[in-house]
Every structure is written in structure tokens, then in C-alpha cells.
Amino acid sequence: MENITAEEVKQRLDKGEALHLVDVREPHENAEFNIGGILLPLGDIRAMQTDAIEDLKDEEVIVYCKSGNRSGQAAMLLETYGFQNVKNLTGGMMGWQQQFGQ
Picture 1: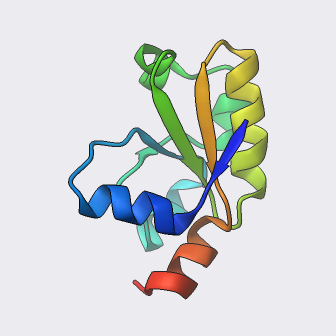
Picture 2: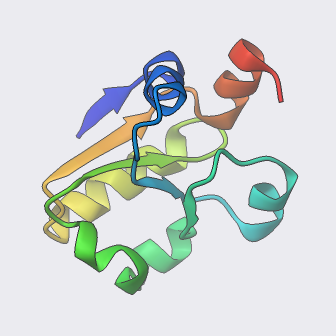
């Protein structure tokens, strides 16, 4: 698992790059603030319910959560499920909001 910074993700989004973002938080957290990722809570990933992103196994997938902890766990799990290029957004949405606001 690699890490990626909020600054790097934001720069890539600002350039119009299509990123495969996966939000592993709970639905209520996603509703409060998100950066456009597919909602796939960590519990679903733990239960191997990854159908929503199954076609991304050979693509770069950037996972994020509130602080970077759950997404780190999710990234490791996804790698064991055969995902080849998973990156964890360090600092999560707390870090994103501190750096860029809402």
C-alpha cells in the first residue's frame, strides 16, 4: 500500500484527471462532506462486498476516510483481494478540510 497526500489528489482533480476515489466511511459521514468518491464502507470491504469496484482491480484506486486509519485498513484488505494499485489518502477528510476547507 502506498500513501498519497491531499495536496497531490487535489492537484490531480484540479487538472481534470479522472481518479478512482473510494470513500470507506459510513453513509452519514459521506453525506456531511465528500470529494466525490464511491461510497464503500469499511464493513462492506471486510465482508468482501466489493462488487461496486471489482472492475478497478488493475487501476489506481485511492481510498479515504475521516483520518486515514480506516482507509489504511481498507487498502490492505483490497490488496489481499487482488487490487494492484491501492493508495491511502493520508490525513483523510480531516486533513483535506484543514488544508482546503469545505
